[in-house]
Image 1 (cartoon, rainbow, N blue to C red):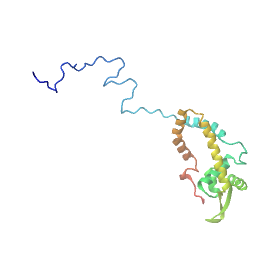
Image 2 (cartoon, one colour; image 1 turned 60 degrees about the horizontal axis):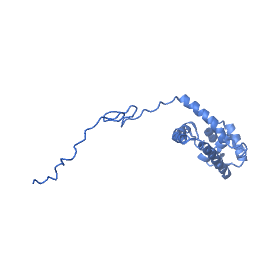
Image 3 (tube, rainbow, N blue to C red; image 1 turned 180 degrees about the vertical axis):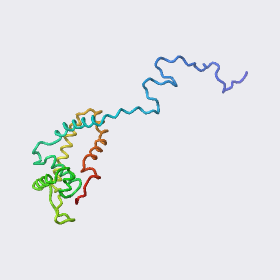
Image 4 (cartoon, one colour; image 1 turned 90 degrees about the vertical axis):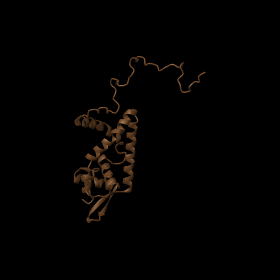
Length: 203
């Protein structure tokens, strides 16, 4: 009797199965599904909208959004948006002369001077001698002024958060994605946030 070779294939085992016809709709090697993006390729980017269209839609959105973020008139005394902007500039950049504040806010010097008098009378800012020129004075936030500013900012953020929560998750993600562009736009258009256009505190 001849010994069986353990490495030999079993003569009773079935051989390789021949491939049958492909079923309709099945992908086969070398073919691409219509509409599919080939592996390694990049999907085309959407067309960039016209800047005029972007500007108009953004302006309209801000026009309707900003009034709802402000508190009730008289809620914090006589703190108007322009006066709040003045306190914000002093909080960000520190003590400065009235002329420097006027430049940062983009308003006339006489208007700024009158506003500073009102802020001083309310106890939200104080005047100190300018160490570089004793004949001039610097204006700076007081502790009550700084506390008021932070309170108003917190209230504004809370109002905005309440509105954001009404958006869908997709809209909230889209808004988050757009934040860097909005922040760059704010930096380029607001002199109080753009270092290249900021005057020195002693100007």
